[in-house]
Amino acid sequence: MRILIFLTTCLFAAHSVAADNESVVARLLNGSTYDVLDAGSEEPVLLKFWATWCVACLQEMPAYVELHEKYGERVRFLAVNVAVSDPRDRVASTVDQYELSMPVAYDESGDLWNRYDIIGTPTYVLLGSDGTILHRTYGHDSSLEPALDSAIARHTPGTGQTDTNSIEHPIGSPAMNDVDVDGNLVDLHAVDGDALVAYHFAVWCASYVKDSYPELSRRCQAFEQQIQQLRDAALPGVRLIGFVSAYSTDEASAVRYRDTRHVGEPIIFDTHGAYAAISGVRSFPHVTVVAAGGKTIYSGSEVPENILQIIRDEKDRGH
Image 1 (spheres, helix red, strand yellow):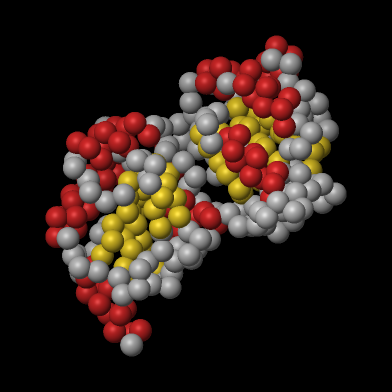
Image 2: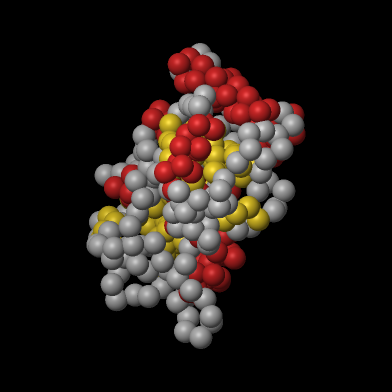
């Protein structure tokens, strides 16, 4: 079972977690406290958000324990129980059952959940020692160990690694990139003289919420039509990139969506929250138009009919 917090995900924009070295204190299951951003530690921190009633969370526990055994001396681990309909004694019993030897937080206040914009379980959030989000993934996937290796190298002198996290950069930065569903590296900065149109959507939105949230369903359906019209128009000076929300879906669904609709532009399955990082918006549907140099010239829930004129006006202002 996975948590569904649909309205929160759709209607509220994400806040970014700044690398400000401020204190982030978690309350542990045993009643003590744990400083997530310990100023005396230079190790990265891996948070796992989980619940005892989350089937996927428990299925992944053995692999999580193995991960701790492998990396526990170089990475600080914190297992964060979300404390939603999850009594302490039930959590404690599960901790004993799976022999979790890392600290276990009981996030009764929801502070950690809210701080790191968690939308479901199991979610893993990898932090640098300064609090910068280096990596996040929904479920224990193949990206986790490479991310840990990279985070460790980041804090190891002489490795040639830098402190740069590509998805932390504003759109327009040369370091800003991601990988599409075909495994191709996609440059996410606007090319000189052109504009980047990045759009964010959920493949299930128009159909799944038809009864529970009809207004959103209609908006999603209209948005898909607007994007298709923009795609068909093939406007000069416009480069399309689609971001599929990873919320409550998988990459295979993103690929099927792309194939059945004959989408030609890059489609990114947004497991890292790159769209929110570059636009400041988690909600969908949403579109952001960015000019060369990283300047956002439009941001909204609808594709503007005069999008080409918006781009032309920005070019004229730049001359």
